Length: 548
Image 1 (cartoon, rainbow, N blue to C red):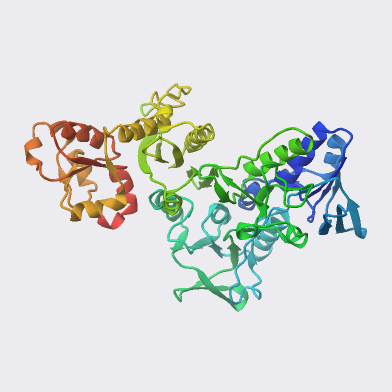
Image 2 (cartoon, one colour):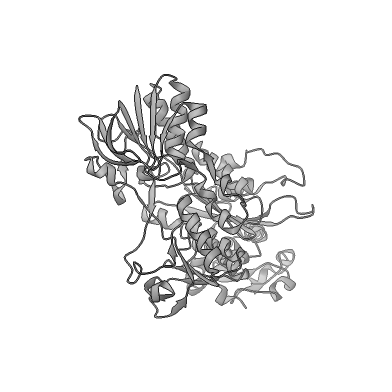
Protein backbone atom coordinates (compact mmCIF):
# COMPACT_ATOMS: atom_id res chain seq x y z
CA UNK A 1 0.00 0.00 0.00
CA UNK A 2 1.24 3.46 -0.95
CA UNK A 3 0.07 6.31 1.25
CA UNK A 4 0.78 9.96 0.56
CA UNK A 5 0.29 12.57 3.28
CA UNK A 6 0.10 16.27 2.46
CA UNK A 7 1.26 18.29 5.47
CA UNK A 8 3.14 17.30 8.59
CA UNK A 9 3.13 18.72 12.13
CA UNK A 10 0.31 17.42 14.38
CA UNK A 11 -2.19 15.67 12.15
CA UNK A 12 0.06 14.53 9.32
CA UNK A 13 2.93 13.25 11.43
CA UNK A 14 0.63 11.47 13.89
CA UNK A 15 -0.93 9.68 10.93
CA UNK A 16 2.43 8.82 9.38
CA UNK A 17 4.03 7.34 12.49
CA UNK A 18 0.90 5.40 13.44
CA UNK A 19 0.65 4.04 9.90
CA UNK A 20 4.19 2.77 10.12
CA UNK A 21 3.57 1.06 13.46
CA UNK A 22 0.61 -0.74 11.90
CA UNK A 23 2.01 -1.31 8.39
CA UNK A 24 5.70 -2.12 8.31
CA UNK A 25 5.73 -2.73 4.55
CA UNK A 26 3.69 0.28 3.41
CA UNK A 27 5.28 3.05 1.39
CA UNK A 28 4.60 6.31 3.23
CA UNK A 29 5.43 9.67 1.67
CA UNK A 30 4.98 12.99 3.48
CA UNK A 31 4.89 16.20 1.47
CA UNK A 32 5.60 19.37 3.44
CA UNK A 33 5.38 22.74 1.73
CA UNK A 34 7.69 24.40 4.22
CA UNK A 35 11.17 23.52 5.44
CA UNK A 36 10.04 21.88 8.70
CA UNK A 37 7.82 18.82 8.88
CA UNK A 38 7.50 18.46 12.65
CA UNK A 39 7.73 21.46 14.94
CA UNK A 40 6.20 22.79 18.15
CA UNK A 41 3.99 25.55 16.78
CA UNK A 42 2.36 26.05 20.19
CA UNK A 43 5.80 26.89 21.57
CA UNK A 44 6.59 29.70 19.13
CA UNK A 45 5.59 32.63 21.40
CA UNK A 46 7.78 31.23 24.17
CA UNK A 47 10.78 31.27 21.87
CA UNK A 48 10.06 34.92 21.11
CA UNK A 49 9.92 35.66 24.84
CA UNK A 50 13.21 33.88 25.46
CA UNK A 51 11.75 31.26 27.79
CA UNK A 52 12.63 28.61 25.20
CA UNK A 53 16.25 29.54 24.61
CA UNK A 54 17.25 27.11 21.87
CA UNK A 55 15.55 27.25 18.47
CA UNK A 56 16.37 23.57 17.98
CA UNK A 57 13.95 22.72 20.80
CA UNK A 58 11.10 23.80 18.52
CA UNK A 59 12.02 21.15 15.94
CA UNK A 60 10.45 17.93 17.20
CA UNK A 61 11.62 15.68 14.34
CA UNK A 62 13.63 16.06 11.17
CA UNK A 63 13.35 14.21 7.84
CA UNK A 64 16.51 12.33 8.79
CA UNK A 65 15.25 11.23 12.21
CA UNK A 66 11.92 10.19 10.75
CA UNK A 67 13.67 8.19 8.04
CA UNK A 68 15.89 6.47 10.57
CA UNK A 69 13.22 5.51 13.07
CA UNK A 70 10.09 5.12 10.96
CA UNK A 71 11.37 4.61 7.40
CA UNK A 72 9.30 7.58 6.23
CA UNK A 73 9.96 9.38 2.96
CA UNK A 74 9.70 13.01 4.07
CA UNK A 75 9.97 15.62 1.34
CA UNK A 76 10.23 19.17 2.69
CA UNK A 77 9.95 22.29 0.55
CA UNK A 78 7.62 20.25 -1.62
CA UNK A 79 4.25 21.72 -2.51
CA UNK A 80 1.23 19.68 -3.56
CA UNK A 81 -0.18 21.46 -6.61
CA UNK A 82 -3.21 19.40 -7.65
CA UNK A 83 -4.97 16.09 -7.18
CA UNK A 84 -6.54 13.84 -9.82
CA UNK A 85 -8.91 11.68 -7.76
CA UNK A 86 -9.80 9.49 -10.75
CA UNK A 87 -6.19 8.64 -11.61
CA UNK A 88 -5.24 8.68 -7.93
CA UNK A 89 -2.30 10.95 -8.64
CA UNK A 90 -1.02 14.10 -7.04
CA UNK A 91 1.11 16.68 -8.84
CA UNK A 92 3.86 18.27 -6.75
CA UNK A 93 6.62 20.84 -7.07
CA UNK A 94 9.82 20.25 -5.14
CA UNK A 95 13.54 20.69 -5.31
CA UNK A 96 13.63 18.44 -8.41
CA UNK A 97 10.90 20.35 -10.25
CA UNK A 98 7.35 19.22 -10.93
CA UNK A 99 6.36 15.58 -10.96
CA UNK A 100 3.40 13.34 -10.15
CA UNK A 101 3.02 10.74 -7.42
CA UNK A 102 0.49 7.92 -7.46
CA UNK A 103 -1.24 6.81 -4.29
CA UNK A 104 -3.55 4.17 -2.90
CA UNK A 105 -4.62 6.37 -0.02
CA UNK A 106 -4.17 10.12 0.34
CA UNK A 107 -4.34 12.05 3.60
CA UNK A 108 -4.74 15.82 3.54
CA UNK A 109 -3.37 17.61 6.59
CA UNK A 110 -2.78 21.09 5.21
CA UNK A 111 -3.63 22.91 8.44
CA UNK A 112 -4.83 26.48 8.57
CA UNK A 113 -3.39 29.79 7.53
CA UNK A 114 -3.56 33.07 9.45
CA UNK A 115 -6.49 35.24 8.45
CA UNK A 116 -5.13 38.53 7.16
CA UNK A 117 -7.89 41.13 6.66
CA UNK A 118 -8.01 43.37 3.62
CA UNK A 119 -7.06 46.47 5.57
CA UNK A 120 -5.91 49.62 3.72
CA UNK A 121 -2.15 50.07 3.89
CA UNK A 122 -1.45 46.52 5.06
CA UNK A 123 0.21 45.33 1.82
CA UNK A 124 2.70 48.21 2.09
CA UNK A 125 3.50 47.63 5.76
CA UNK A 126 7.02 46.40 6.40
CA UNK A 127 6.71 45.62 10.10
CA UNK A 128 3.60 43.40 10.24
CA UNK A 129 3.93 39.68 10.99
CA UNK A 130 1.82 36.62 11.72
CA UNK A 131 2.78 33.75 14.02
CA UNK A 132 2.02 30.29 12.67
CA UNK A 133 5.23 28.42 11.86
CA UNK A 134 9.00 28.40 12.27
CA UNK A 135 9.70 30.83 9.39
CA UNK A 136 7.25 33.24 11.06
CA UNK A 137 9.06 33.06 14.40
CA UNK A 138 12.39 33.44 12.62
CA UNK A 139 11.16 36.59 10.89
CA UNK A 140 9.86 38.13 14.14
CA UNK A 141 12.94 37.35 16.22
CA UNK A 142 15.25 38.57 13.44
CA UNK A 143 13.26 41.81 13.20
CA UNK A 144 13.48 42.35 16.97
CA UNK A 145 17.23 41.64 17.01
CA UNK A 146 17.96 43.91 14.04
CA UNK A 147 15.49 46.76 14.57
CA UNK A 148 15.18 46.88 18.39
CA UNK A 149 11.50 47.94 18.31
CA UNK A 150 10.29 50.02 21.24
CA UNK A 151 6.52 49.82 20.62
CA UNK A 152 4.44 46.91 19.40
CA UNK A 153 0.77 46.46 18.53
CA UNK A 154 -0.88 43.04 18.71
CA UNK A 155 -4.12 42.90 16.73
CA UNK A 156 -6.32 40.21 18.19
CA UNK A 157 -6.73 39.21 21.85
CA UNK A 158 -7.27 35.49 21.42
CA UNK A 159 -4.93 32.82 22.76
CA UNK A 160 -2.00 33.43 20.39
CA UNK A 161 -2.42 37.20 20.51
CA UNK A 162 -2.17 37.26 24.30
CA UNK A 163 0.77 34.87 24.32
CA UNK A 164 2.57 37.15 21.86
CA UNK A 165 1.68 40.25 23.89
CA UNK A 166 3.30 38.69 26.94
CA UNK A 167 6.30 37.49 24.91
CA UNK A 168 6.97 40.94 23.49
CA UNK A 169 6.57 42.53 26.92
CA UNK A 170 9.18 40.12 28.26
CA UNK A 171 11.49 41.41 25.51
CA UNK A 172 11.18 44.91 26.94
CA UNK A 173 8.78 46.23 24.31
CA UNK A 174 5.78 48.44 25.13
CA UNK A 175 2.74 46.49 23.95
CA UNK A 176 -0.77 47.56 22.94
CA UNK A 177 -3.46 44.99 22.19
CA UNK A 178 -6.37 45.79 19.87
CA UNK A 179 -9.44 43.52 19.87
CA UNK A 180 -12.57 44.02 17.78
CA UNK A 181 -14.73 42.07 20.26
CA UNK A 182 -15.87 43.87 23.43
CA UNK A 183 -13.49 41.78 25.56
CA UNK A 184 -10.20 39.93 25.52
CA UNK A 185 -10.37 36.16 25.01
CA UNK A 186 -13.66 36.15 23.05
CA UNK A 187 -14.25 32.40 23.66
CA UNK A 188 -14.76 33.18 27.36
CA UNK A 189 -17.83 34.75 28.90
CA UNK A 190 -17.35 38.41 29.69
CA UNK A 191 -17.13 38.25 33.47
CA UNK A 192 -14.43 35.57 33.29
CA UNK A 193 -12.41 37.48 30.69
CA UNK A 194 -12.17 40.52 32.99
CA UNK A 195 -9.74 38.66 35.25
CA UNK A 196 -7.42 38.29 32.25
CA UNK A 197 -7.90 41.91 31.22
CA UNK A 198 -6.86 43.08 34.69
CA UNK A 199 -3.78 40.86 34.60
CA UNK A 200 -2.75 42.37 31.27
CA UNK A 201 -3.23 45.90 32.55
CA UNK A 202 -1.36 45.10 35.77
CA UNK A 203 1.62 44.11 33.64
CA UNK A 204 1.59 47.28 31.58
CA UNK A 205 -0.28 46.07 28.49
CA UNK A 206 -2.51 48.77 27.02
CA UNK A 207 -5.86 47.46 25.76
CA UNK A 208 -8.36 48.63 23.16
CA UNK A 209 -11.48 46.46 23.00
CA UNK A 210 -14.58 46.87 20.88
CA UNK A 211 -12.58 48.49 18.09
CA UNK A 212 -10.77 47.22 15.00
CA UNK A 213 -7.73 48.41 13.09
CA UNK A 214 -8.98 50.29 10.04
CA UNK A 215 -5.71 51.17 8.31
CA UNK A 216 -1.93 51.15 8.29
CA UNK A 217 0.03 54.30 7.51
CA UNK A 218 3.70 55.10 6.95
CA UNK A 219 4.57 51.53 5.92
CA UNK A 220 2.95 50.16 9.08
CA UNK A 221 4.51 52.52 11.60
CA UNK A 222 1.05 53.94 12.35
CA UNK A 223 -1.96 51.73 13.09
CA UNK A 224 -5.23 53.61 12.68
CA UNK A 225 -8.27 52.44 14.63
CA UNK A 226 -11.93 52.70 13.66
CA UNK A 227 -12.31 55.30 16.39
CA UNK A 228 -9.85 57.53 14.55
CA UNK A 229 -7.12 57.10 17.13
CA UNK A 230 -3.66 56.37 15.80
CA UNK A 231 -1.12 54.09 17.48
CA UNK A 232 2.61 54.16 16.89
CA UNK A 233 4.00 50.73 16.13
CA UNK A 234 7.52 49.57 15.39
CA UNK A 235 6.28 45.98 15.21
CA UNK A 236 2.75 44.66 14.64
CA UNK A 237 1.52 41.09 15.12
CA UNK A 238 -1.67 40.08 13.29
CA UNK A 239 -3.50 37.43 15.29
CA UNK A 240 -7.14 37.62 14.23
CA UNK A 241 -7.88 33.96 13.64
CA UNK A 242 -7.19 31.31 11.03
CA UNK A 243 -8.77 29.96 7.86
CA UNK A 244 -8.63 26.37 6.62
CA UNK A 245 -5.96 25.77 3.98
CA UNK A 246 -8.38 24.34 1.43
CA UNK A 247 -6.98 25.26 -2.00
CA UNK A 248 -5.79 21.75 -2.86
CA UNK A 249 -9.07 20.16 -1.82
CA UNK A 250 -11.15 22.77 -3.59
CA UNK A 251 -9.35 22.41 -6.92
CA UNK A 252 -9.77 18.63 -6.67
CA UNK A 253 -13.54 19.04 -6.39
CA UNK A 254 -13.66 17.84 -2.81
CA UNK A 255 -16.75 19.03 -0.99
CA UNK A 256 -16.28 21.94 1.39
CA UNK A 257 -18.53 23.29 4.12
CA UNK A 258 -18.67 26.09 6.68
CA UNK A 259 -15.92 28.71 6.38
CA UNK A 260 -14.38 26.66 3.60
CA UNK A 261 -13.53 23.69 5.81
CA UNK A 262 -13.13 20.23 4.31
CA UNK A 263 -16.12 17.97 4.91
CA UNK A 264 -15.29 14.48 6.17
CA UNK A 265 -17.37 11.53 7.34
CA UNK A 266 -16.98 9.57 10.57
CA UNK A 267 -13.97 7.80 9.03
CA UNK A 268 -12.30 11.11 8.03
CA UNK A 269 -12.92 10.30 4.37
CA UNK A 270 -13.74 13.23 2.11
CA UNK A 271 -16.25 13.26 -0.72
CA UNK A 272 -13.49 11.82 -2.95
CA UNK A 273 -12.88 8.11 -2.51
CA UNK A 274 -9.63 7.15 -0.75
CA UNK A 275 -8.86 10.77 0.09
CA UNK A 276 -8.94 11.55 3.81
CA UNK A 277 -8.43 14.76 5.76
CA UNK A 278 -7.48 15.65 9.33
CA UNK A 279 -6.42 18.63 11.40
CA UNK A 280 -7.22 22.32 11.37
CA UNK A 281 -8.66 22.27 7.84
CA UNK A 282 -11.56 19.90 8.48
CA UNK A 283 -15.09 20.33 9.74
CA UNK A 284 -15.91 18.18 12.74
CA UNK A 285 -18.84 17.76 15.08
CA UNK A 286 -19.15 19.81 18.21
CA UNK A 287 -19.64 16.83 20.47
CA UNK A 288 -21.94 18.70 22.84
CA UNK A 289 -24.35 20.21 20.31
CA UNK A 290 -23.84 17.57 17.59
CA UNK A 291 -23.43 20.40 15.09
CA UNK A 292 -20.70 21.17 12.58
CA UNK A 293 -17.83 23.28 13.82
CA UNK A 294 -14.11 23.89 13.38
CA UNK A 295 -11.72 23.51 16.30
CA UNK A 296 -8.13 24.22 15.21
CA UNK A 297 -6.29 22.83 18.23
CA UNK A 298 -3.32 20.49 18.60
CA UNK A 299 -4.99 17.79 20.66
CA UNK A 300 -7.84 17.04 18.22
CA UNK A 301 -5.41 17.15 15.28
CA UNK A 302 -3.09 14.59 16.89
CA UNK A 303 -6.01 12.33 17.72
CA UNK A 304 -7.45 12.60 14.22
CA UNK A 305 -4.10 11.67 12.68
CA UNK A 306 -3.87 8.54 14.76
CA UNK A 307 -7.48 7.58 14.10
CA UNK A 308 -7.29 8.02 10.32
CA UNK A 309 -4.21 5.77 10.31
CA UNK A 310 -6.25 3.13 12.12
CA UNK A 311 -9.11 3.47 9.65
CA UNK A 312 -6.80 3.11 6.65
CA UNK A 313 -5.20 0.09 8.32
CA UNK A 314 -8.59 -1.61 8.64
CA UNK A 315 -9.37 -0.85 12.27
CA UNK A 316 -12.66 0.77 13.21
CA UNK A 317 -12.29 4.22 14.70
CA UNK A 318 -15.09 6.76 14.66
CA UNK A 319 -14.63 10.51 14.34
CA UNK A 320 -16.67 11.58 17.36
CA UNK A 321 -15.83 15.27 17.18
CA UNK A 322 -14.30 17.52 19.81
CA UNK A 323 -15.27 19.81 22.68
CA UNK A 324 -12.61 22.52 22.38
CA UNK A 325 -10.49 22.26 25.53
CA UNK A 326 -7.94 25.08 25.67
CA UNK A 327 -5.73 27.03 28.05
CA UNK A 328 -3.55 30.14 27.95
CA UNK A 329 -1.04 31.63 30.36
CA UNK A 330 -1.16 35.40 30.73
CA UNK A 331 1.72 36.49 32.95
CA UNK A 332 0.88 35.05 36.41
CA UNK A 333 -2.63 33.96 35.48
CA UNK A 334 -3.97 30.86 33.74
CA UNK A 335 -7.27 30.90 31.85
CA UNK A 336 -8.82 27.69 30.55
CA UNK A 337 -12.10 26.64 29.02
CA UNK A 338 -13.91 23.62 27.67
CA UNK A 339 -17.13 23.21 25.75
CA UNK A 340 -19.65 25.97 25.17
CA UNK A 341 -20.00 29.48 26.53
CA UNK A 342 -23.20 31.40 27.22
CA UNK A 343 -23.27 33.09 23.81
CA UNK A 344 -23.06 29.76 22.02
CA UNK A 345 -25.79 28.23 24.16
CA UNK A 346 -28.10 31.17 23.60
CA UNK A 347 -27.45 31.05 19.85
CA UNK A 348 -28.29 27.34 19.89
CA UNK A 349 -31.50 27.97 21.82
CA UNK A 350 -30.47 25.72 24.71
CA UNK A 351 -31.95 26.03 28.17
CA UNK A 352 -29.08 26.37 30.62
CA UNK A 353 -28.05 27.53 34.05
CA UNK A 354 -24.68 28.77 35.28
CA UNK A 355 -22.87 28.42 38.58
CA UNK A 356 -19.72 30.22 39.73
CA UNK A 357 -17.45 28.92 42.48
CA UNK A 358 -14.51 30.61 44.17
CA UNK A 359 -12.10 28.19 45.82
CA UNK A 360 -8.42 27.68 46.56
CA UNK A 361 -6.06 25.59 44.45
CA UNK A 362 -5.12 23.69 47.62
CA UNK A 363 -6.07 23.77 51.29
CA UNK A 364 -6.37 27.38 52.40
CA UNK A 365 -4.49 26.82 55.64
CA UNK A 366 -1.44 25.48 53.81
CA UNK A 367 1.02 28.17 52.66
CA UNK A 368 0.83 29.40 49.09
CA UNK A 369 -2.86 28.82 48.40
CA UNK A 370 -4.28 30.98 45.61
CA UNK A 371 -7.82 31.55 44.41
CA UNK A 372 -9.44 29.77 41.48
CA UNK A 373 -12.57 31.24 39.89
CA UNK A 374 -14.67 28.60 38.14
CA UNK A 375 -17.82 28.78 36.03
CA UNK A 376 -19.88 25.84 34.79
CA UNK A 377 -22.83 25.80 32.38
CA UNK A 378 -25.31 22.95 32.49
CA UNK A 379 -28.79 21.76 31.57
CA UNK A 380 -31.06 22.30 34.61
CA UNK A 381 -33.39 19.53 33.48
CA UNK A 382 -31.06 16.57 33.01
CA UNK A 383 -27.72 17.80 34.38
CA UNK A 384 -25.76 17.67 31.12
CA UNK A 385 -22.53 19.65 31.43
CA UNK A 386 -22.30 22.12 28.54
CA UNK A 387 -19.02 23.84 29.35
CA UNK A 388 -16.76 25.39 31.95
CA UNK A 389 -14.23 28.18 32.34
CA UNK A 390 -11.62 28.85 34.97
CA UNK A 391 -9.05 31.50 35.85
CA UNK A 392 -6.42 31.56 38.56
CA UNK A 393 -2.72 31.41 39.25
CA UNK A 394 -2.47 27.66 39.85
CA UNK A 395 -4.59 24.54 39.45
CA UNK A 396 -6.88 25.78 36.69
CA UNK A 397 -5.54 23.26 34.17
CA UNK A 398 -6.29 20.35 36.49
CA UNK A 399 -9.90 21.37 37.09
CA UNK A 400 -10.74 22.12 33.45
CA UNK A 401 -9.10 18.85 32.39
CA UNK A 402 -11.30 17.01 34.89
CA UNK A 403 -14.41 18.72 33.54
CA UNK A 404 -13.34 17.99 29.96
CA UNK A 405 -13.05 14.32 30.92
CA UNK A 406 -16.49 14.50 32.56
CA UNK A 407 -18.03 15.94 29.39
CA UNK A 408 -16.33 13.34 27.18
CA UNK A 409 -17.52 10.63 29.55
CA UNK A 410 -21.12 11.92 29.55
CA UNK A 411 -21.09 12.55 33.30
CA UNK A 412 -23.83 14.75 34.76
CA UNK A 413 -23.49 17.50 37.34
CA UNK A 414 -24.50 15.20 40.18
CA UNK A 415 -21.69 12.83 39.17
CA UNK A 416 -19.21 15.61 39.95
CA UNK A 417 -20.16 15.30 43.61
CA UNK A 418 -19.03 11.67 43.52
CA UNK A 419 -15.61 12.22 41.96
CA UNK A 420 -12.69 11.36 44.23
CA UNK A 421 -9.36 13.15 43.92
CA UNK A 422 -5.99 12.81 45.55
CA UNK A 423 -5.89 15.03 48.61
CA UNK A 424 -3.22 16.32 50.93
CA UNK A 425 -2.97 19.98 51.99
CA UNK A 426 -0.17 20.92 49.56
CA UNK A 427 -2.10 19.52 46.58
CA UNK A 428 -5.82 20.13 46.97
CA UNK A 429 -8.81 20.42 49.23
CA UNK A 430 -11.05 17.79 50.75
CA UNK A 431 -13.86 19.38 48.73
CA UNK A 432 -12.28 20.11 45.38
CA UNK A 433 -13.55 23.04 43.27
CA UNK A 434 -14.95 20.47 40.83
CA UNK A 435 -16.92 18.86 43.65
CA UNK A 436 -18.14 22.31 44.66
CA UNK A 437 -19.42 22.97 41.13
CA UNK A 438 -21.32 19.71 41.35
CA UNK A 439 -22.82 20.65 44.72
CA UNK A 440 -23.88 24.09 43.51
CA UNK A 441 -25.40 22.83 40.26
CA UNK A 442 -27.24 19.99 41.98
CA UNK A 443 -28.68 22.46 44.51
CA UNK A 444 -30.12 24.40 41.57
CA UNK A 445 -31.56 21.29 39.94
CA UNK A 446 -33.13 20.02 43.15
CA UNK A 447 -34.67 23.35 44.11
CA UNK A 448 -32.55 24.04 47.17
CA UNK A 449 -31.26 27.20 45.54
CA UNK A 450 -32.26 29.67 42.85
CA UNK A 451 -29.66 31.94 41.36
CA UNK A 452 -29.39 34.92 39.08
CA UNK A 453 -26.40 36.05 37.02
CA UNK A 454 -24.60 39.36 37.34
CA UNK A 455 -26.35 40.75 34.25
CA UNK A 456 -29.79 39.94 35.68
CA UNK A 457 -29.43 42.00 38.87
CA UNK A 458 -30.55 45.26 37.30
CA UNK A 459 -33.86 43.75 36.23
CA UNK A 460 -34.40 42.34 39.71
CA UNK A 461 -33.64 45.77 41.18
CA UNK A 462 -36.11 47.44 38.83
CA UNK A 463 -38.77 44.88 39.79
CA UNK A 464 -38.47 45.86 43.44
CA UNK A 465 -36.28 43.08 44.82
CA UNK A 466 -34.79 43.53 48.28
CA UNK A 467 -31.01 43.34 48.00
CA UNK A 468 -29.26 41.69 50.94
CA UNK A 469 -25.49 41.54 51.54
CA UNK A 470 -24.57 39.03 54.28
CA UNK A 471 -20.85 39.82 54.51
CA UNK A 472 -19.19 41.28 57.57
CA UNK A 473 -19.15 45.11 57.89
CA UNK A 474 -15.38 45.26 57.31
CA UNK A 475 -15.78 43.49 53.97
CA UNK A 476 -18.55 45.86 52.94
CA UNK A 477 -16.36 48.87 53.75
CA UNK A 478 -13.77 47.60 51.24
CA UNK A 479 -16.36 47.48 48.47
CA UNK A 480 -20.09 47.07 48.05
CA UNK A 481 -22.70 46.78 45.32
CA UNK A 482 -24.96 49.79 45.21
CA UNK A 483 -28.37 49.31 46.83
CA UNK A 484 -27.58 46.30 49.02
CA UNK A 485 -28.55 46.28 52.72
CA UNK A 486 -25.92 44.71 54.97
CA UNK A 487 -27.04 42.14 57.53
CA UNK A 488 -24.15 39.78 58.40
CA UNK A 489 -24.98 36.09 58.07
CA UNK A 490 -24.45 35.42 61.79
CA UNK A 491 -27.03 38.12 62.62
CA UNK A 492 -29.59 37.08 60.03
CA UNK A 493 -31.81 34.93 62.26
CA UNK A 494 -32.17 37.66 64.89
CA UNK A 495 -32.67 40.47 62.34
CA UNK A 496 -34.86 38.59 59.88
CA UNK A 497 -37.76 40.92 60.72
CA UNK A 498 -35.93 43.71 58.86
CA UNK A 499 -36.43 41.85 55.57
CA UNK A 500 -39.81 42.35 53.85
CA UNK A 501 -41.80 39.18 53.17
CA UNK A 502 -43.60 40.65 50.16
CA UNK A 503 -40.47 41.20 48.03
CA UNK A 504 -38.09 38.79 46.36
CA UNK A 505 -34.78 38.81 48.23
CA UNK A 506 -31.54 38.74 46.24
CA UNK A 507 -28.71 37.61 48.50
CA UNK A 508 -25.02 38.27 47.98
CA UNK A 509 -21.77 37.77 49.88
CA UNK A 510 -18.14 37.61 48.75
CA UNK A 511 -18.13 34.35 46.78
CA UNK A 512 -21.68 32.96 46.94
CA UNK A 513 -21.22 30.44 49.72
CA UNK A 514 -22.51 32.47 52.67
CA UNK A 515 -25.30 33.88 50.53
CA UNK A 516 -26.40 30.31 49.80
CA UNK A 517 -26.51 29.67 53.56
CA UNK A 518 -28.60 32.81 53.99
CA UNK A 519 -30.83 31.73 51.11
CA UNK A 520 -31.53 28.42 52.86
CA UNK A 521 -32.50 30.22 56.08
CA UNK A 522 -34.83 32.59 54.24
CA UNK A 523 -36.43 29.95 52.03
CA UNK A 524 -37.37 27.89 55.05
CA UNK A 525 -38.97 30.99 56.60
CA UNK A 526 -41.17 31.46 53.55
CA UNK A 527 -39.18 34.08 51.62
CA UNK A 528 -38.80 34.16 47.84
CA UNK A 529 -35.04 34.28 47.32
CA UNK A 530 -32.35 34.23 44.68
CA UNK A 531 -28.59 33.90 45.16
CA UNK A 532 -26.44 36.34 43.16
CA UNK A 533 -24.23 33.76 41.49
CA UNK A 534 -20.56 34.39 42.10
CA UNK A 535 -21.58 37.24 44.40
CA UNK A 536 -19.26 40.21 44.91
CA UNK A 537 -16.23 38.44 43.40
CA UNK A 538 -17.88 38.16 39.99
CA UNK A 539 -20.15 41.21 40.04
CA UNK A 540 -17.29 43.53 40.97
CA UNK A 541 -15.37 42.36 37.89
CA UNK A 542 -18.26 42.62 35.45
CA UNK A 543 -19.76 45.83 36.82
CA UNK A 544 -16.84 47.83 38.20
CA UNK A 545 -18.67 51.09 37.72
CA UNK A 546 -21.33 50.14 40.28
CA UNK A 547 -18.95 49.25 43.09
CA UNK A 548 -18.83 51.78 45.91
